[in-house]
Structure formats: structure tokens, C-alpha cells
Amino acid sequence: MANEAILCELDSARNAVERTVTNGTAISKNTILKLADPNTASASTGTGDIFGGIMAADKILSDGATKASAYLEGKWKLVCNSAVAISTGEKVTSSGANLIRTATAAEIDAGKWIGYAEEDIEVSTAGVVRLRGF
Image 1 (tube, rainbow, N blue to C red):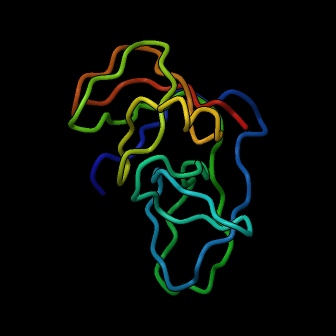
Image 2: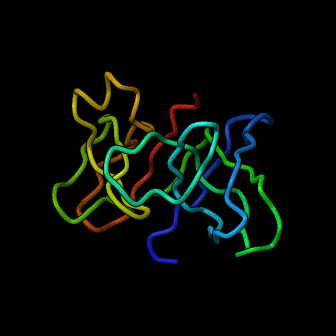
């Protein structure tokens, strides 16, 4: 998988939540997820998706599983998209498959941001982001 999230540290013992997933879908560990109703997660492919967490383990295609765990907390190395660098302290959101970018004011107001950049992140490189922890 390209641009997967890399775990740096987890904040606490209560660091994963259960999400519903589709049996006929494969999702790799450390994939950024988007959330839909009802509590259903899939791989984030868009920009400004509602954050569903970071996949805790591989979901195998058609393995019968319809539940998966996702991390909502911790420090992760995430990859900036190829458009504009991210500055330390900025709130970030999804920007395609396993990519992030600076969140807009409208996305922040709608709760579509996933965390704070803890360092400057140049385009197409990974940098540390602390998830906001919902």
C-alpha cells in the first residue's frame, strides 16, 4: 500500500474503536478511513472526508468479517499531498488515498479535520500528526 500511516506513539489504553466494514472489501492496516452512517468505515479516497480512524489490522477481502478496529488517537507519520506544504500547528484533513492537507475553515467547522501537524510537512513527504482523539 502506498503512503500508509506509520505509528509513532499511542496516547492511552483506550486507543481503538470498532467500525462496521463491508465483507466484500479489503482494507490494509494503517489506511486512513472515512466514516459514513451507520458507523461504517472504508478507505478514504476523497478530500475532506469525515475521519473514521486509522485501520488497526488488515481486513481481508470476503473473509466474512464485518467489524474492524480503528485508531483515533496517537502520533502518526502521514503523507502530505503534492499541492501545498503543511505548517506546524495547522489542522489537517484527508486529501485522497492516505494523503493529508491543511483543513479549510469550513472543514474545521464541520469537524472534518483529523489532527494537528507537529512539524512542517513538505509536499509528498511524511510528517508527524497528532490525531485529535474524538
